[in-house]
Image (cartoon, rainbow, N blue to C red):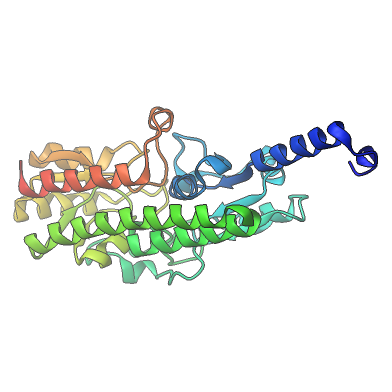
Length: 312
């Protein structure tokens, strides 16, 4: 542009103005692997980023494997955010195949103590690790809202590094979102404090370890591990039915994105109500189109727990 402006004048002024406007309108391209990261980035980046989710809406997260075309998508981005190697063990190989030296690769689990599954699960819940990731590690870090806040800060820092001119905006957006997470956490703390000792009958895979530890509740589940292909033994299902009958539980909770076969059997045999408890790995195509948020899902979880644990 300099050689065009050697003579000065109105043309030079207009050219510089157009260039400045174009630079101001340029959005940081961000790709997040799974829904919680997508929503955190959406909250922090707002109108200043161009955001997409690698995991297609409606697809079960643990069964997802990236395709060659995904490498091309990531290569065209400024920032790639993933949840950690426990959740996405394929990340290293994927990034090695991406020809984009300037790409910022952000591990959203940075600064978070990723716990062994055996330590996280309730006394009756699964103790096996992620079938695709680090063995005996629970990858569902976002279900502790303190961890979620750390992930929000990590994303805000990455956006600020890529787009320093909007650092203040990213910091303020992150502050507001973390404030909403704190208020949500307080509502869960208050709810469980009023109930005392709580056992949740969960007919899904062991996704709620961090949640369990955060709020001091136990999960009863017939599954071992996080693999969507895992099947509980008939003995485990029978034991779960006996637990529901013995405890008088009014509801059996099930997970998103997977046919609730086991939860349905237990509910049918015991007369318990069948209710969704969402782990927020992913959302449906309809929910995606409706711009459903992570906080929306967690607020719905709280209402489901109120209903299922009170017998209403």
